[in-house]
Amino acid sequence: SKKKGLSAEEKRTRMMEIFFETKDVFQLKDLEKIAPKEKGITAMSVKEVLQSLVDDGMVDCERIGTSNYYWAFPSKALHARKRKLEVLESQLSEGSQKHASLQKSIEKAKIGRCETVK
Image 1: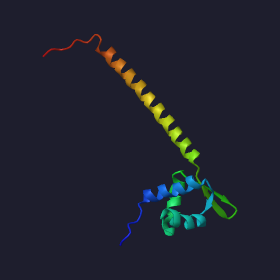
Image 2: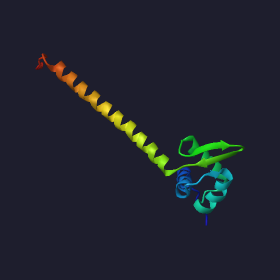
Image 3: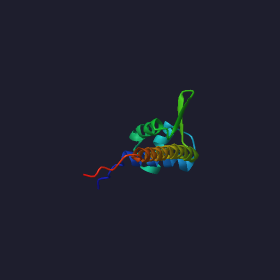
Image 4: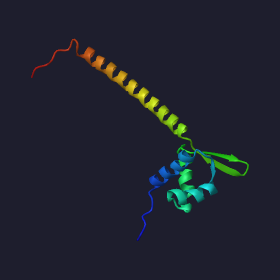
């Protein structure tokens, strides 16, 4: 039977599970061993998936000596979501204020104008 490969998004999700479940720090070679066994991500695609997560700021990477270490903790993801929520809420409130002031401008503009009847 032919096995269907995982989508890029599934690989990313499963890679994040490795970090969140273990709450540990890894080197690339560790993840290339763990990911295929535990999450079914082919060893060949581990580096690419990991880099996409690092690029999106979901996984941290730090070079120490000659090695790169990767980690991601659930609390960081939570803080990132909280910050995003705060930004969106402030944008919503700004939008609502702008809407209200435009409504007032419309009302003022209507005063003193006669409705023309055709």
